[in-house]
Length: 107
View 1 (cartoon, helix red, strand yellow):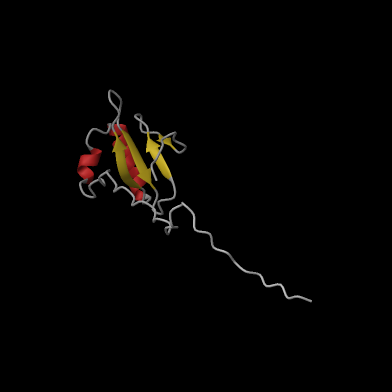
View 2: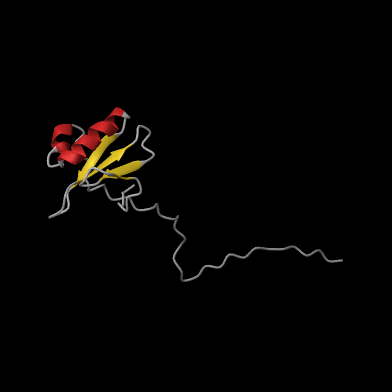
């Protein structure tokens, strides 16, 4: 019996030579500036007296004032996080707590 040998043929064509895959494009740098870590007094400026009383009571239980949203023509919205940074609450204008705010937070 005749032996059959398989032979690989490489064809040269008009296509360009294979190039290695390119690396993913570099990510654009973050444009948002981090909030200043300091001045808790400046965060409290403009809060209603009822909000301040509630804030002081929450700080006893180790909640911290993270930031204050200040929408135009509306009362400021202080946002507090618990000691583990797992939950957040909002203090309404009248000093009551909103434990399920509709506030959208960036990650």
